Figure 1 (tube, rainbow, N blue to C red):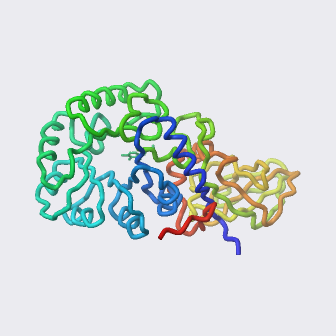
Figure 2 (figure 1 turned 180 degrees about the vertical axis):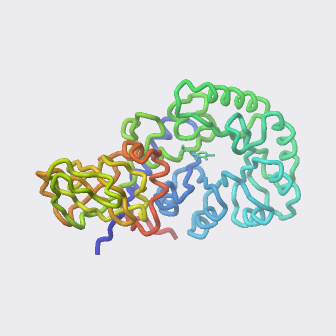
Figure 3 (figure 1 turned 45 degrees about the horizontal axis):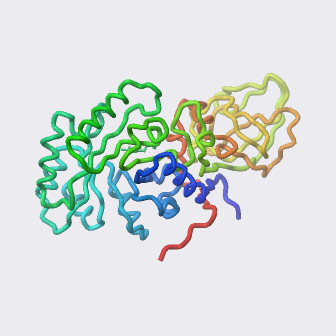
Length: 365
Ligand SMILES: Cc1ncc(COP(=O)(O)O)c(C=O)c1O
């Protein structure tokens, strides 16, 4: 039985995108960001498809443990570090790499009495003001971490850019300049580039890069698609038409009648809604492809259904495939219709959506 809506994840595209990113940042090591269920693509399958990445990165220890339990044995970085001293013990058991972004985490590391020697990154706040030790406190934090018996080697320096995708952004320039000064003061491993910086910021293409979105074949840059950057979108989000209606001028569609036909037309009801991650915020006119033909969302998105205007001459019928986003309909172009960004659409695909992998993932020993 075919299950809809479904997500088809092209694992070969993921592996190819990794190589495109590698070529864009020659000599760099790649920490593949697979948090949030690998941006909705399925964390374990993606981790296996990206076996050539130099490390994997997640946000939460629960994600890292799930990877270990699935047999992923390579390096896993906790981008937000541990949230408690108990988690530090778990991190030791699961051989996780730590990001230290506040003094409390350094306290826990100093107090750690297990035999594990952690690999660590010291995260510096160069201007995003989210996570990280301030520039002023960076030297004392670095000395403290270097003095910890629980580390395996001097920590690398990490920072995160607030607006790497905005060309000419002065904050990004300042962040990278300050970070460079710090890296000169504390030579060792460095990491500053997210996907946007890989493509736009030569100064960030050094040491370890941390791509997320680009791995999935989606562009981090405004007005540019993944294909423009040589990437292949890995996700197809698709469903089927489950009913067809013929409307007359003046007929309204859906809850609260937010769209009214101005001329006779055919409407396809597709099996997808906000319960699947197709956001209720999508506006009238959002594009979809029905049997490869352009159609537009009309009326409110329901929990399990949407209505698509197929046009009066459409020959579409029940069972026809509906592409919501994918290689032929880049998610970068769909996101603005819900006033959002591709990241949110990808991460929001809900658990009830069936996921299939192409080619089928290779079983791990
Ligand atoms: C610390 C950190 N590094 C790297 C990334 C990857 O960013 P992107 O998906 O824009 O490449 C993220 C994502 O949010 C992040 O939080």
